[in-house]
Length: 323
Image 1: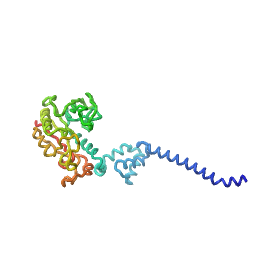
Image 2: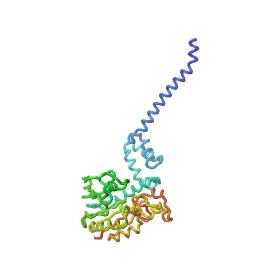
Image 3: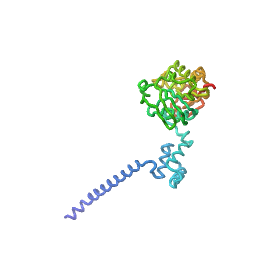
């Protein structure tokens, strides 16, 4: 009788045992997957390292030759995971083929402004108009990549409580950085009376002149001409009214007072006694601009510095005080 009962129960026992084994295997597999997913990039297998680098940076799987080449190079320690990323970042495919998404316009403009600032002249004494950074006391010019050391960088910005909430930050004190001394003047950029005549090598106005009226902008430029040493430079980037008016009827920022066209901005600089050295644009708007059509995808994808300034989302001009 007992043998018969055991035989009857055998399938149930087997199924129960199989279920326990399956559950144990499932838990192990989940642990392994979780462990793999949590691995830092530097600890992945060579094969997975190559795939991850290509997937993230180029948004595709490696081609067969690249997969073999870089997997072998990683295994043989001929290239490190970080060096693999560097090679992909410096490739023409990364720069010209991987298009930024339309929703990434702000990030794209930021990258273009970095390119513009890296190309500015070396200067000993710099004044940055509206150059406060919301998080870093070194200011926007340094954070965006200005490459040279300096004796002094004077950041002129409104007191934090007077700024639009979008740009509010801490009140920073004097900073002795590894690049040079950074000081702050909390006042309107229209009032540069505290600066001596012929005392500044470079004035930078990044996304700031559009925040004051046209009359105030003329006053700013008059002071810029006064404080620049002969041969000193003014660099500025600002929204291009020709393109932003295609985007929408109102200003693209609620704190803007004016958005200049290239012709208007050039005229203001010349009227202030400055020589325009170069006229460039940031983030080309594509063929649509010539058709009086705003193409947001083109503006986001075409980041960098372009010769056709009038067809770009931002104007980026360099001017000089005559010697």
